[in-house]
Length: 606
Image (cartoon, rainbow, N blue to C red; front, side, top):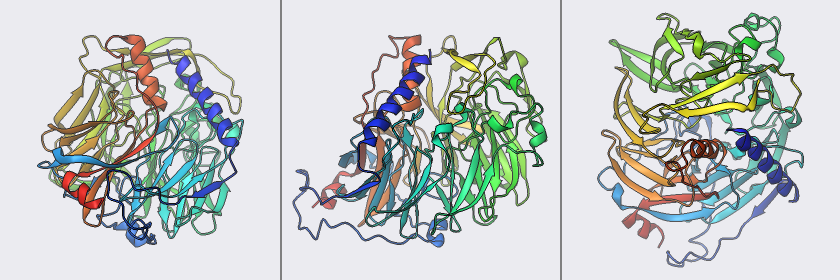
Protein backbone atom coordinates (compact mmCIF):
# COMPACT_ATOMS: atom_id res chain seq x y z
CA UNK A 1 0.00 0.00 0.00
CA UNK A 2 2.70 2.50 0.96
CA UNK A 3 5.32 1.19 -1.47
CA UNK A 4 4.39 3.50 -4.33
CA UNK A 5 4.13 6.45 -1.95
CA UNK A 6 7.59 6.02 -0.47
CA UNK A 7 9.21 5.25 -3.80
CA UNK A 8 7.53 8.30 -5.29
CA UNK A 9 8.79 10.43 -2.42
CA UNK A 10 12.37 9.26 -2.91
CA UNK A 11 12.13 9.75 -6.66
CA UNK A 12 10.61 13.20 -6.43
CA UNK A 13 13.25 14.21 -3.90
CA UNK A 14 16.06 13.08 -6.16
CA UNK A 15 14.56 14.93 -9.12
CA UNK A 16 14.08 18.05 -7.06
CA UNK A 17 17.67 17.90 -5.88
CA UNK A 18 18.92 17.47 -9.45
CA UNK A 19 16.94 20.47 -10.62
CA UNK A 20 18.23 22.63 -7.81
CA UNK A 21 21.80 21.54 -8.45
CA UNK A 22 21.65 23.42 -11.73
CA UNK A 23 21.24 26.72 -9.89
CA UNK A 24 24.05 28.89 -8.66
CA UNK A 25 25.41 27.68 -5.35
CA UNK A 26 24.04 29.41 -2.25
CA UNK A 27 22.34 31.97 -4.45
CA UNK A 28 20.67 34.96 -2.87
CA UNK A 29 18.49 37.10 -5.10
CA UNK A 30 17.62 40.61 -3.94
CA UNK A 31 14.31 41.47 -5.59
CA UNK A 32 13.05 44.90 -6.48
CA UNK A 33 9.50 45.61 -5.38
CA UNK A 34 7.09 44.42 -8.10
CA UNK A 35 4.45 46.50 -9.73
CA UNK A 36 1.73 47.24 -7.22
CA UNK A 37 -1.00 44.57 -7.42
CA UNK A 38 -4.27 45.63 -8.99
CA UNK A 39 -6.16 45.24 -5.72
CA UNK A 40 -4.21 48.03 -4.01
CA UNK A 41 -3.67 51.61 -5.02
CA UNK A 42 -0.24 52.36 -6.43
CA UNK A 43 1.96 54.06 -3.86
CA UNK A 44 5.31 55.77 -4.03
CA UNK A 45 8.55 53.79 -3.96
CA UNK A 46 9.14 55.09 -0.43
CA UNK A 47 5.75 53.79 0.69
CA UNK A 48 6.54 50.30 -0.58
CA UNK A 49 10.09 50.21 0.79
CA UNK A 50 10.87 47.14 2.92
CA UNK A 51 10.65 47.62 6.70
CA UNK A 52 13.87 47.93 8.66
CA UNK A 53 15.03 44.81 10.50
CA UNK A 54 14.89 44.92 14.31
CA UNK A 55 17.58 42.88 16.07
CA UNK A 56 16.26 39.82 17.92
CA UNK A 57 17.61 39.52 21.46
CA UNK A 58 17.32 36.93 24.21
CA UNK A 59 14.94 39.28 25.99
CA UNK A 60 12.68 39.56 22.95
CA UNK A 61 12.63 35.80 22.45
CA UNK A 62 11.68 35.29 26.10
CA UNK A 63 8.97 38.00 25.94
CA UNK A 64 8.02 38.60 22.31
CA UNK A 65 5.82 41.56 21.46
CA UNK A 66 2.22 40.56 20.63
CA UNK A 67 2.59 42.09 17.16
CA UNK A 68 5.37 39.67 16.19
CA UNK A 69 5.77 35.94 15.58
CA UNK A 70 9.46 35.38 16.27
CA UNK A 71 9.75 31.59 16.41
CA UNK A 72 8.20 28.32 15.31
CA UNK A 73 5.26 28.35 17.75
CA UNK A 74 5.39 32.05 18.57
CA UNK A 75 6.79 31.62 22.08
CA UNK A 76 9.23 29.33 23.87
CA UNK A 77 6.39 27.53 25.68
CA UNK A 78 5.00 26.21 22.39
CA UNK A 79 1.44 27.42 22.96
CA UNK A 80 0.80 28.44 19.35
CA UNK A 81 -1.23 31.33 20.81
CA UNK A 82 -1.45 34.91 19.57
CA UNK A 83 -2.52 37.59 22.11
CA UNK A 84 -3.93 39.72 19.27
CA UNK A 85 -7.73 40.09 19.29
CA UNK A 86 -8.65 42.52 16.51
CA UNK A 87 -9.88 39.48 14.57
CA UNK A 88 -12.39 37.73 16.80
CA UNK A 89 -15.33 35.35 16.86
CA UNK A 90 -17.71 38.22 16.17
CA UNK A 91 -16.04 39.53 13.01
CA UNK A 92 -13.98 36.67 11.56
CA UNK A 93 -16.62 36.20 8.84
CA UNK A 94 -15.19 39.44 7.35
CA UNK A 95 -11.72 37.91 6.92
CA UNK A 96 -10.42 38.25 3.35
CA UNK A 97 -7.12 37.61 1.55
CA UNK A 98 -4.86 40.66 1.50
CA UNK A 99 -2.10 39.18 -0.62
CA UNK A 100 -0.73 35.86 -1.80
CA UNK A 101 2.71 34.80 -2.93
CA UNK A 102 3.61 31.73 -4.98
CA UNK A 103 6.83 30.04 -3.87
CA UNK A 104 7.44 28.36 -7.22
CA UNK A 105 7.90 24.82 -5.89
CA UNK A 106 5.75 21.81 -4.99
CA UNK A 107 5.63 19.35 -2.06
CA UNK A 108 4.98 20.01 1.63
CA UNK A 109 4.94 23.69 2.63
CA UNK A 110 4.92 23.36 6.41
CA UNK A 111 6.84 26.32 7.81
CA UNK A 112 5.15 29.14 9.73
CA UNK A 113 5.46 32.69 8.42
CA UNK A 114 7.94 34.16 10.93
CA UNK A 115 7.43 37.92 11.33
CA UNK A 116 9.68 40.52 12.92
CA UNK A 117 8.36 44.09 12.81
CA UNK A 118 6.91 43.87 9.34
CA UNK A 119 9.42 41.50 7.75
CA UNK A 120 8.22 37.96 7.03
CA UNK A 121 10.44 34.91 6.52
CA UNK A 122 9.20 31.65 5.04
CA UNK A 123 11.00 28.49 3.99
CA UNK A 124 9.98 25.99 1.35
CA UNK A 125 11.01 22.59 0.05
CA UNK A 126 14.15 22.68 -2.11
CA UNK A 127 16.04 24.78 0.44
CA UNK A 128 14.59 28.22 -0.14
CA UNK A 129 14.30 31.08 2.34
CA UNK A 130 12.19 34.03 1.21
CA UNK A 131 11.97 37.41 2.93
CA UNK A 132 8.77 39.37 2.26
CA UNK A 133 7.24 42.67 3.25
CA UNK A 134 4.59 41.34 5.63
CA UNK A 135 2.17 44.16 4.80
CA UNK A 136 2.28 43.98 1.00
CA UNK A 137 3.86 40.66 0.02
CA UNK A 138 6.68 42.38 -1.88
CA UNK A 139 9.81 40.24 -2.07
CA UNK A 140 12.85 41.61 -0.25
CA UNK A 141 15.25 38.75 -1.02
CA UNK A 142 15.25 35.07 -1.84
CA UNK A 143 17.93 32.54 -0.85
CA UNK A 144 18.34 29.27 -2.75
CA UNK A 145 20.80 26.63 -1.67
CA UNK A 146 22.27 24.28 -4.23
CA UNK A 147 21.52 20.68 -3.30
CA UNK A 148 23.69 17.68 -4.22
CA UNK A 149 22.64 15.66 -7.25
CA UNK A 150 22.69 12.38 -5.31
CA UNK A 151 20.47 13.64 -2.49
CA UNK A 152 17.21 11.75 -1.87
CA UNK A 153 14.53 13.54 0.12
CA UNK A 154 12.27 11.09 1.90
CA UNK A 155 10.34 14.04 3.37
CA UNK A 156 10.78 17.03 1.04
CA UNK A 157 9.85 19.92 3.30
CA UNK A 158 11.25 22.52 5.70
CA UNK A 159 9.61 23.80 8.87
CA UNK A 160 11.01 27.29 9.21
CA UNK A 161 13.76 29.61 10.35
CA UNK A 162 15.07 30.90 13.65
CA UNK A 163 15.91 34.58 14.23
CA UNK A 164 18.69 35.88 16.47
CA UNK A 165 20.61 39.13 16.40
CA UNK A 166 20.60 40.31 12.80
CA UNK A 167 20.63 36.81 11.32
CA UNK A 168 18.25 34.19 10.00
CA UNK A 169 19.14 30.53 10.64
CA UNK A 170 17.90 27.63 8.55
CA UNK A 171 18.58 23.87 8.70
CA UNK A 172 18.85 22.34 5.24
CA UNK A 173 17.92 18.97 3.80
CA UNK A 174 21.58 18.25 2.95
CA UNK A 175 22.41 18.63 6.65
CA UNK A 176 23.89 22.11 6.91
CA UNK A 177 23.05 24.87 9.36
CA UNK A 178 23.14 28.15 7.45
CA UNK A 179 23.25 31.69 8.85
CA UNK A 180 21.94 34.46 6.59
CA UNK A 181 22.09 38.22 6.94
CA UNK A 182 18.51 39.13 7.84
CA UNK A 183 18.59 42.35 5.82
CA UNK A 184 20.14 41.06 2.59
CA UNK A 185 19.85 37.27 2.63
CA UNK A 186 23.58 36.92 2.05
CA UNK A 187 25.12 33.78 3.50
CA UNK A 188 27.24 34.56 6.57
CA UNK A 189 28.33 30.97 7.22
CA UNK A 190 27.27 27.41 6.49
CA UNK A 191 28.21 24.69 8.98
CA UNK A 192 28.02 21.00 8.11
CA UNK A 193 26.01 19.16 10.76
CA UNK A 194 26.00 15.57 9.44
CA UNK A 195 26.52 13.43 6.33
CA UNK A 196 23.45 13.22 4.12
CA UNK A 197 24.92 10.21 2.31
CA UNK A 198 24.49 8.18 5.51
CA UNK A 199 20.76 8.95 5.68
CA UNK A 200 20.84 12.14 7.73
CA UNK A 201 18.77 15.15 6.69
CA UNK A 202 17.19 18.14 8.44
CA UNK A 203 13.72 19.65 8.15
CA UNK A 204 13.10 21.34 11.52
CA UNK A 205 13.21 25.02 12.44
CA UNK A 206 16.22 25.68 14.70
CA UNK A 207 15.69 26.73 18.31
CA UNK A 208 17.85 29.56 19.72
CA UNK A 209 18.46 30.03 23.43
CA UNK A 210 21.28 31.84 25.24
CA UNK A 211 23.36 32.26 22.10
CA UNK A 212 23.13 28.63 21.01
CA UNK A 213 21.42 27.57 17.79
CA UNK A 214 20.09 24.05 18.36
CA UNK A 215 19.16 21.59 15.63
CA UNK A 216 18.39 17.89 15.33
CA UNK A 217 18.26 15.60 12.34
CA UNK A 218 15.85 13.30 10.57
CA UNK A 219 16.73 9.83 9.32
CA UNK A 220 15.27 7.25 11.69
CA UNK A 221 14.02 5.27 8.69
CA UNK A 222 17.65 4.98 7.56
CA UNK A 223 18.94 3.69 10.89
CA UNK A 224 20.90 6.76 11.96
CA UNK A 225 21.83 7.54 15.56
CA UNK A 226 19.71 10.51 16.61
CA UNK A 227 21.27 13.67 18.01
CA UNK A 228 20.77 17.26 19.07
CA UNK A 229 23.62 19.73 18.46
CA UNK A 230 24.24 23.29 19.61
CA UNK A 231 26.17 25.86 17.59
CA UNK A 232 27.52 29.27 18.52
CA UNK A 233 25.14 31.76 16.96
CA UNK A 234 27.93 34.18 16.07
CA UNK A 235 30.71 31.96 14.71
CA UNK A 236 28.78 28.85 13.70
CA UNK A 237 31.21 26.61 15.58
CA UNK A 238 29.76 23.49 17.13
CA UNK A 239 29.59 23.94 20.90
CA UNK A 240 28.28 20.49 21.80
CA UNK A 241 26.59 17.39 20.40
CA UNK A 242 24.38 15.01 22.37
CA UNK A 243 23.18 11.70 21.02
CA UNK A 244 19.69 10.57 21.91
CA UNK A 245 20.91 6.96 21.88
CA UNK A 246 23.44 6.52 24.72
CA UNK A 247 26.73 4.84 23.90
CA UNK A 248 28.86 2.60 26.12
CA UNK A 249 29.34 4.07 29.60
CA UNK A 250 26.49 6.55 29.21
CA UNK A 251 23.30 6.33 31.31
CA UNK A 252 20.69 4.31 29.48
CA UNK A 253 23.08 2.31 27.33
CA UNK A 254 22.01 -0.83 29.20
CA UNK A 255 18.52 -0.47 27.69
CA UNK A 256 19.97 -1.72 24.38
CA UNK A 257 20.40 -5.31 25.56
CA UNK A 258 21.71 -6.82 22.35
CA UNK A 259 23.36 -3.82 20.75
CA UNK A 260 21.93 -1.90 17.85
CA UNK A 261 22.44 1.49 19.50
CA UNK A 262 24.67 2.71 16.64
CA UNK A 263 21.69 2.45 14.26
CA UNK A 264 18.91 2.91 16.80
CA UNK A 265 17.03 5.92 15.42
CA UNK A 266 15.67 8.37 17.98
CA UNK A 267 15.80 11.29 15.54
CA UNK A 268 14.79 14.83 16.47
CA UNK A 269 12.96 16.53 13.61
CA UNK A 270 10.53 18.97 15.25
CA UNK A 271 11.56 22.16 17.09
CA UNK A 272 11.81 21.93 20.87
CA UNK A 273 10.26 24.11 23.57
CA UNK A 274 12.25 25.98 26.22
CA UNK A 275 11.82 26.97 29.87
CA UNK A 276 14.04 30.02 30.54
CA UNK A 277 13.58 29.74 34.32
CA UNK A 278 14.87 26.16 34.45
CA UNK A 279 17.18 26.79 31.48
CA UNK A 280 16.01 23.53 29.92
CA UNK A 281 15.04 22.83 26.33
CA UNK A 282 12.56 19.99 25.86
CA UNK A 283 12.84 17.88 22.72
CA UNK A 284 10.70 15.01 21.50
CA UNK A 285 12.52 12.01 20.00
CA UNK A 286 11.53 9.69 17.19
CA UNK A 287 10.99 6.00 16.60
CA UNK A 288 13.54 3.27 17.20
CA UNK A 289 15.16 1.51 14.25
CA UNK A 290 14.45 -0.98 12.85
CA UNK A 291 10.73 -0.89 13.58
CA UNK A 292 10.38 -4.36 15.12
CA UNK A 293 11.15 -4.22 18.83
CA UNK A 294 12.11 -7.89 19.13
CA UNK A 295 15.04 -7.16 16.77
CA UNK A 296 16.52 -4.87 19.50
CA UNK A 297 15.38 -6.04 22.98
CA UNK A 298 15.22 -3.51 25.81
CA UNK A 299 13.53 -0.21 26.54
CA UNK A 300 15.76 1.51 23.93
CA UNK A 301 16.39 4.90 25.52
CA UNK A 302 15.96 7.67 24.52
CA UNK A 303 13.66 6.78 21.64
CA UNK A 304 10.00 7.92 21.73
CA UNK A 305 10.79 10.16 24.70
CA UNK A 306 11.02 13.73 25.86
CA UNK A 307 14.54 14.76 26.87
CA UNK A 308 15.47 17.90 28.83
CA UNK A 309 18.71 19.51 27.64
CA UNK A 310 20.68 22.40 29.11
CA UNK A 311 21.50 24.63 26.10
CA UNK A 312 24.75 25.80 27.67
CA UNK A 313 26.45 22.39 27.60
CA UNK A 314 24.01 20.05 25.85
CA UNK A 315 23.76 17.65 28.79
CA UNK A 316 20.59 15.58 29.17
CA UNK A 317 19.30 16.49 32.62
CA UNK A 318 16.30 14.16 32.68
CA UNK A 319 13.84 12.34 30.44
CA UNK A 320 10.52 10.55 30.21
CA UNK A 321 9.86 7.70 27.77
CA UNK A 322 6.28 7.64 26.47
CA UNK A 323 6.47 4.03 25.31
CA UNK A 324 9.36 1.58 25.53
CA UNK A 325 10.75 -0.75 22.84
CA UNK A 326 8.81 1.14 20.17
CA UNK A 327 7.48 -1.24 17.51
CA UNK A 328 4.82 0.91 15.80
CA UNK A 329 6.86 3.74 14.20
CA UNK A 330 5.27 6.11 16.69
CA UNK A 331 7.67 9.05 16.64
CA UNK A 332 7.11 11.32 19.62
CA UNK A 333 9.00 14.23 18.10
CA UNK A 334 6.40 16.91 18.80
CA UNK A 335 7.85 18.95 21.64
CA UNK A 336 5.75 19.05 24.82
CA UNK A 337 3.80 22.26 25.42
CA UNK A 338 4.72 24.10 28.63
CA UNK A 339 1.45 24.79 30.48
CA UNK A 340 0.61 25.47 34.12
CA UNK A 341 -2.29 23.10 34.80
CA UNK A 342 -4.63 23.00 37.79
CA UNK A 343 -4.74 19.31 38.65
CA UNK A 344 -6.33 17.89 41.80
CA UNK A 345 -6.09 21.25 43.55
CA UNK A 346 -2.44 21.80 42.60
CA UNK A 347 -0.93 24.19 40.06
CA UNK A 348 1.48 21.97 38.15
CA UNK A 349 4.15 23.30 35.77
CA UNK A 350 3.39 20.71 33.11
CA UNK A 351 4.71 19.22 29.91
CA UNK A 352 1.64 18.41 27.79
CA UNK A 353 1.97 16.06 24.84
CA UNK A 354 -0.84 14.69 22.64
CA UNK A 355 1.17 11.76 21.38
CA UNK A 356 1.43 9.80 18.21
CA UNK A 357 0.73 6.73 20.37
CA UNK A 358 -2.79 8.09 20.88
CA UNK A 359 -2.49 9.19 24.52
CA UNK A 360 -2.67 12.71 25.96
CA UNK A 361 0.21 12.96 28.44
CA UNK A 362 0.66 15.38 31.31
CA UNK A 363 4.07 15.43 32.99
CA UNK A 364 5.46 17.71 35.68
CA UNK A 365 8.65 19.55 34.77
CA UNK A 366 11.22 20.01 37.51
CA UNK A 367 14.83 21.15 37.55
CA UNK A 368 16.15 17.62 37.98
CA UNK A 369 13.32 15.34 36.93
CA UNK A 370 10.16 14.81 34.92
CA UNK A 371 7.29 13.30 36.91
CA UNK A 372 4.36 11.43 35.40
CA UNK A 373 0.98 13.05 36.15
CA UNK A 374 -1.57 11.45 33.81
CA UNK A 375 -2.17 9.77 30.50
CA UNK A 376 -5.52 9.26 28.75
CA UNK A 377 -6.34 8.11 25.20
CA UNK A 378 -7.67 10.78 22.84
CA UNK A 379 -8.31 8.32 19.97
CA UNK A 380 -9.10 4.62 19.85
CA UNK A 381 -5.98 2.82 21.13
CA UNK A 382 -5.80 -0.98 21.55
CA UNK A 383 -2.08 -1.36 22.32
CA UNK A 384 -1.78 -0.16 25.93
CA UNK A 385 -3.42 -2.49 28.45
CA UNK A 386 -2.73 -0.03 31.30
CA UNK A 387 -0.33 2.64 32.55
CA UNK A 388 1.63 2.38 35.77
CA UNK A 389 -0.01 5.01 38.03
CA UNK A 390 3.35 6.15 39.42
CA UNK A 391 5.62 6.14 36.34
CA UNK A 392 3.24 6.11 33.37
CA UNK A 393 5.04 3.11 31.90
CA UNK A 394 2.59 1.25 29.65
CA UNK A 395 1.86 -2.47 29.80
CA UNK A 396 1.23 -3.79 26.30
CA UNK A 397 -1.40 -5.98 24.77
CA UNK A 398 1.19 -8.31 23.23
CA UNK A 399 -1.20 -9.34 20.46
CA UNK A 400 -0.99 -5.74 19.19
CA UNK A 401 2.81 -5.42 19.31
CA UNK A 402 4.46 -5.88 15.88
CA UNK A 403 7.18 -8.53 15.72
CA UNK A 404 9.38 -10.39 13.30
CA UNK A 405 7.82 -12.79 10.79
CA UNK A 406 4.22 -12.01 11.82
CA UNK A 407 1.53 -9.67 10.61
CA UNK A 408 0.18 -7.61 13.51
CA UNK A 409 -2.70 -5.16 13.43
CA UNK A 410 -3.04 -2.22 15.83
CA UNK A 411 -4.80 1.12 16.42
CA UNK A 412 -3.97 3.90 15.80
CA UNK A 413 -2.00 3.47 12.56
CA UNK A 414 1.73 4.08 12.27
CA UNK A 415 0.88 7.74 11.57
CA UNK A 416 -0.62 7.82 15.05
CA UNK A 417 -3.44 9.63 16.78
CA UNK A 418 -1.62 12.88 15.97
CA UNK A 419 1.44 13.11 13.79
CA UNK A 420 3.84 16.09 13.74
CA UNK A 421 1.25 18.94 13.20
CA UNK A 422 1.37 20.90 16.46
CA UNK A 423 -1.52 21.30 18.89
CA UNK A 424 -2.21 24.70 20.47
CA UNK A 425 -3.16 25.97 23.93
CA UNK A 426 -5.28 29.03 24.68
CA UNK A 427 -4.60 30.42 28.19
CA UNK A 428 -7.92 32.31 28.12
CA UNK A 429 -10.20 29.35 27.38
CA UNK A 430 -7.75 27.01 29.15
CA UNK A 431 -8.34 24.48 26.37
CA UNK A 432 -5.86 22.42 24.37
CA UNK A 433 -6.69 22.02 20.66
CA UNK A 434 -5.54 18.76 19.09
CA UNK A 435 -5.51 17.91 15.34
CA UNK A 436 -6.33 14.19 15.66
CA UNK A 437 -6.88 11.28 13.31
CA UNK A 438 -9.45 8.85 14.66
CA UNK A 439 -10.57 5.42 13.39
CA UNK A 440 -7.37 4.69 11.44
CA UNK A 441 -5.56 1.45 12.20
CA UNK A 442 -2.45 -0.15 10.75
CA UNK A 443 -0.54 -3.37 10.33
CA UNK A 444 3.12 -4.35 10.08
CA UNK A 445 4.90 -7.55 9.16
CA UNK A 446 8.47 -7.65 10.42
CA UNK A 447 11.59 -9.05 8.74
CA UNK A 448 15.23 -9.09 9.74
CA UNK A 449 17.28 -6.62 7.79
CA UNK A 450 20.95 -5.72 7.54
CA UNK A 451 21.82 -2.07 7.92
CA UNK A 452 23.37 -0.35 4.90
CA UNK A 453 24.23 3.34 5.42
CA UNK A 454 21.98 5.59 3.37
CA UNK A 455 19.38 2.90 2.67
CA UNK A 456 15.99 2.32 4.30
CA UNK A 457 16.25 0.31 7.52
CA UNK A 458 12.62 -0.30 8.42
CA UNK A 459 12.67 -3.94 9.47
CA UNK A 460 9.66 -4.41 7.19
CA UNK A 461 9.11 -4.55 3.47
CA UNK A 462 7.21 -1.62 2.02
CA UNK A 463 4.56 -4.07 0.89
CA UNK A 464 4.17 -5.20 4.53
CA UNK A 465 2.87 -1.84 5.75
CA UNK A 466 -0.92 -1.60 5.90
CA UNK A 467 -3.65 0.83 6.87
CA UNK A 468 -7.36 0.25 7.47
CA UNK A 469 -10.50 1.95 8.78
CA UNK A 470 -12.24 0.73 11.90
CA UNK A 471 -15.56 -0.95 11.03
CA UNK A 472 -18.39 1.57 10.99
CA UNK A 473 -16.06 4.58 11.13
CA UNK A 474 -17.95 7.73 10.14
CA UNK A 475 -14.98 10.11 10.13
CA UNK A 476 -11.19 10.30 10.33
CA UNK A 477 -9.96 13.82 10.97
CA UNK A 478 -11.13 15.37 14.23
CA UNK A 479 -10.26 18.74 15.78
CA UNK A 480 -10.53 18.23 19.54
CA UNK A 481 -10.64 20.63 22.51
CA UNK A 482 -9.50 19.30 25.91
CA UNK A 483 -9.84 20.62 29.44
CA UNK A 484 -6.50 19.64 30.97
CA UNK A 485 -7.67 20.13 34.55
CA UNK A 486 -10.19 17.30 34.15
CA UNK A 487 -8.71 15.37 31.21
CA UNK A 488 -12.08 15.64 29.50
CA UNK A 489 -12.80 16.37 25.86
CA UNK A 490 -14.96 19.51 25.74
CA UNK A 491 -15.85 19.48 22.05
CA UNK A 492 -14.75 17.99 18.76
CA UNK A 493 -15.34 18.71 15.09
CA UNK A 494 -15.18 15.69 12.75
CA UNK A 495 -14.13 15.64 9.09
CA UNK A 496 -16.03 12.78 7.47
CA UNK A 497 -14.17 12.61 4.16
CA UNK A 498 -10.68 13.64 5.10
CA UNK A 499 -7.73 12.96 7.31
CA UNK A 500 -6.38 15.90 9.35
CA UNK A 501 -2.84 17.27 8.88
CA UNK A 502 -3.50 20.79 10.11
CA UNK A 503 -1.21 22.59 12.57
CA UNK A 504 -3.28 24.73 14.95
CA UNK A 505 -3.20 28.44 15.82
CA UNK A 506 -5.38 29.90 18.58
CA UNK A 507 -5.85 33.57 19.41
CA UNK A 508 -7.08 35.98 22.07
CA UNK A 509 -9.93 36.72 19.71
CA UNK A 510 -11.49 33.43 20.79
CA UNK A 511 -10.55 31.63 17.59
CA UNK A 512 -8.88 28.45 16.42
CA UNK A 513 -7.38 28.42 12.90
CA UNK A 514 -6.30 25.32 10.98
CA UNK A 515 -6.28 23.64 7.58
CA UNK A 516 -5.07 20.09 7.02
CA UNK A 517 -7.99 18.62 5.03
CA UNK A 518 -8.08 17.31 1.47
CA UNK A 519 -10.73 19.88 0.42
CA UNK A 520 -8.03 22.61 0.53
CA UNK A 521 -9.93 24.66 3.13
CA UNK A 522 -8.40 26.94 5.75
CA UNK A 523 -10.86 27.38 8.62
CA UNK A 524 -11.62 29.32 11.79
CA UNK A 525 -13.58 27.84 14.71
CA UNK A 526 -15.04 29.31 17.87
CA UNK A 527 -12.47 28.44 20.53
CA UNK A 528 -15.11 27.87 23.23
CA UNK A 529 -17.68 25.85 21.30
CA UNK A 530 -15.98 24.48 18.20
CA UNK A 531 -18.55 26.07 15.92
CA UNK A 532 -17.15 26.66 12.39
CA UNK A 533 -17.14 30.41 11.75
CA UNK A 534 -15.21 30.96 8.50
CA UNK A 535 -13.47 29.09 5.72
CA UNK A 536 -11.74 29.71 2.42
CA UNK A 537 -10.59 27.31 -0.26
CA UNK A 538 -6.89 27.73 -1.02
CA UNK A 539 -4.80 26.61 -3.97
CA UNK A 540 -3.70 23.37 -2.28
CA UNK A 541 -4.02 21.51 0.99
CA UNK A 542 -2.87 23.45 4.06
CA UNK A 543 -0.21 21.66 6.11
CA UNK A 544 1.61 24.86 7.03
CA UNK A 545 1.85 26.17 10.58
CA UNK A 546 -0.35 29.32 10.83
CA UNK A 547 0.82 32.49 12.55
CA UNK A 548 -0.61 35.90 13.40
CA UNK A 549 1.03 39.31 13.49
CA UNK A 550 0.28 43.02 13.40
CA UNK A 551 1.66 45.79 11.20
CA UNK A 552 0.57 49.44 11.49
CA UNK A 553 -2.37 48.54 13.70
CA UNK A 554 -3.76 45.79 11.46
CA UNK A 555 -3.84 42.16 12.59
CA UNK A 556 -3.07 39.51 9.99
CA UNK A 557 -3.41 35.73 9.85
CA UNK A 558 -0.83 33.98 7.66
CA UNK A 559 -0.31 30.41 6.50
CA UNK A 560 1.34 28.48 3.70
CA UNK A 561 -0.80 26.21 1.51
CA UNK A 562 1.10 23.36 -0.14
CA UNK A 563 0.09 19.69 0.09
CA UNK A 564 2.61 16.87 -0.01
CA UNK A 565 4.77 14.49 2.05
CA UNK A 566 2.80 12.28 4.50
CA UNK A 567 -0.51 14.11 4.02
CA UNK A 568 -0.35 13.09 0.35
CA UNK A 569 0.78 9.55 1.23
CA UNK A 570 -2.11 9.08 3.63
CA UNK A 571 -4.46 10.46 0.97
CA UNK A 572 -3.21 7.83 -1.49
CA UNK A 573 -3.74 5.08 1.09
CA UNK A 574 -7.28 6.24 1.83
CA UNK A 575 -8.11 6.23 -1.88
CA UNK A 576 -6.90 2.63 -2.03
CA UNK A 577 -9.21 1.73 0.86
CA UNK A 578 -12.30 3.55 -0.44
CA UNK A 579 -11.87 5.31 -3.81
CA UNK A 580 -15.45 6.63 -3.75
CA UNK A 581 -15.37 8.23 -0.32
CA UNK A 582 -11.79 9.50 -0.52
CA UNK A 583 -11.63 10.50 -4.15
CA UNK A 584 -10.30 14.01 -3.74
CA UNK A 585 -7.15 14.79 -5.71
CA UNK A 586 -5.24 17.56 -3.96
CA UNK A 587 -3.19 19.79 -6.28
CA UNK A 588 0.30 20.74 -5.18
CA UNK A 589 2.16 24.04 -5.34
CA UNK A 590 3.13 26.39 -2.53
CA UNK A 591 1.43 29.73 -1.85
CA UNK A 592 1.71 32.08 1.14
CA UNK A 593 -1.74 33.38 2.11
CA UNK A 594 -2.21 36.48 4.28
CA UNK A 595 -5.63 37.55 5.59
CA UNK A 596 -7.10 40.57 7.39
CA UNK A 597 -10.55 41.95 8.11
CA UNK A 598 -12.10 43.45 4.98
CA UNK A 599 -12.10 47.07 6.14
CA UNK A 600 -8.61 46.82 7.59
CA UNK A 601 -7.33 45.12 4.43
CA UNK A 602 -8.61 47.96 2.26
CA UNK A 603 -6.96 50.54 4.50
CA UNK A 604 -3.68 48.63 4.71
CA UNK A 605 -3.29 48.41 0.94
CA UNK A 606 -3.91 52.08 0.22
